Length: 251
Ligand code: PEP
Image (cartoon, rainbow, N blue to C red; front, side):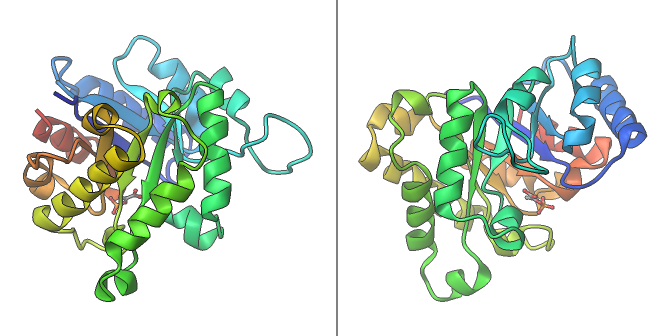
């Protein structure tokens, strides 16, 4: 049985006081008996706040991005060592906004995943097709290319904890959700691909989250699909009550 993992990607939202409020409300509202692992990914500037407020909490936290080098002349970048020193356990890598707005390539994403693993950070590795690609009928080809290139040169043991997030780009922040059948079909495809690339045992245990306009109204249906092991939530994680309802739906 794979444990459900619900992660909130705050994107570029919440200053320090907003972060204190949101984390405090989540802590207050979280049913400590929840079966799901809960992760918040605030902006870099609020990671120290997360570290302080989540010290004794079951809620985990991570970053939304990182650079693959450990230190040096990379103005404006943040290294995996810096994230570790702030107590992060997770890091989102390859989010579609990074791929499209910041031109991140599969090759760069692969370097970041390798560096995260080397530095004991669990990557939440995002993949997914655009609307145009879906309409052309190449969803599986795109996902396969992204998975193969993103995981190039990474061994099975190194993938012990890695999480894959399937996020159809056309469903991110648009209010359009993939139907549970559309999502399940791609999740199954990814799981079978992991089996082909690695092994049945890794395929059976790897966590594949769905992301793209997940909200309290559709979470239960999506999360009840056999190959959907959790959610990566954007917009709906910015309000404690809607994020908590999604966590509840994972039970
Ligand atoms: C995301 O940013 O990963 C995401 C899925 O956003 P939203 O839930 O707003 O579609």
